[in-house]
Each structure stands twice: as C-alpha cells, then as structure tokens.
Length: 258
Image (cartoon, rainbow, N blue to C red; front, side, top):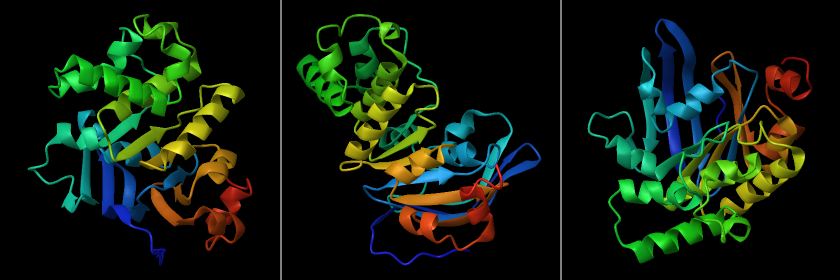
C-alpha cells in the first residue's frame, strides 16, 4: 500500500474495500484517504473500476443486481456499509452527478426543488431561497433566473450538467461525486464546469472520475491511479505528475498504457 503523510483533514477513508459483479471482482483491496475541501481525481484506463468505486461511495451500486462489496468506507465516523445506515440520508450528504446530464422531465425550478420536497421541506419561501442559492453556486442563476418555469430539457448540455450540480447542492451535501462530468460537453462548457468545480471545492469535498489526464492535472489536489481493479498509487497531484513512485503510474501518465 502506498501511504501518505499529510496534515489535511480526512473526510473519507476507504479500507480493504472489494467489489464484485456476480463472480467477477472489479475492486481489489482498495485503501485510500480523501480530504475535506479538496478535489480528488480518480484516474485510470477504461474498465479499471473507477466508476464502480465512485458509485460505491454513496451506495448507488446497491441498486445493481448481483453487486456485492466487502471492506469499509468510513464517513462521519461510521462505515457506510453498516446495516443501520440510512441510505437516503447518506445520499443527501454524499451527492452524485453522472456522466450524462439527466434533468428530470419538469421545470428548471422543480428540478432543483425536487430533493428538498422529497426530504419534507414545505416552506415555499425557504425552497425559493435554496433554489436561488443552489443555482448561483452552480453558476447558472444569471442564465436561467427569468426562465425557471421552463422545461429543463430546453437547456444546453453544459447548462443541464450545471443544473444537475445545482440539484445535488440544494440538499446540502458535504461530498460531491462527479462521474466524467464533462465527457459529453464541448470545450467551452467543459471550462465552465472545471471553473465551477474549483470554486465549489471551497465549500465541498469533491471526488471526480475522469479519463482526461489534463483535466485531472489542472483541477485536482489529489490524484488516485487505478489499474485492473487495484489502486496503484495516490498522492498530491503535483507529486504524482512530477515524480510517480510506481512504474505503472509513470507508464499511464506518459501514455504508454491506456
């Protein structure tokens, strides 16, 4: 195991974590720490387990038939795989935005308000204020403030992705999981999302899966390299890029494996 010495505050600790789809092992004895108000980028070739790990962090994978896991993911002092964990509350505190924007078939306003209403908030003025704030935090308010009652599907791809981020932020998460959030976007929309992610890390802990090494280098504070289901190496992004400790990491960063 590649160990780190750091003064950062750990927000998530993954210990001896394994994951299987039926009999096929996808994640193999993963051990890593992730840190508060930092951007953590999980990188590696397609099929190496990045998205499976990300989806395990708020137990979205529970919804996949035949998925099972062992080991621990410690958040807020508890293993999120303990039997007494409230999954709904877990996903409120650890939100997720997927690769392809998935706005609900409703208005822009109702998309952002949806989670608030699900969690029982009924005060219209309070909902209005949270929707406004979430859209501002997602750098979308100025573009949609006069169109809140229009269908979310009318937005561009980049706007839809920022809307999905606003929807996640509205329920006040502590951690935001982003699965390839710019892979379907053009360069201008990608830059807007990257700028947004960097800004959001002031208030949230962000874990992003990306195939884009340049993106991971640009925006992340910590980098985690996975290969064939194993965590090969992790550390501060600057150190990983300049001086990787493992040959596999160096080969991947230099394009010798893909």
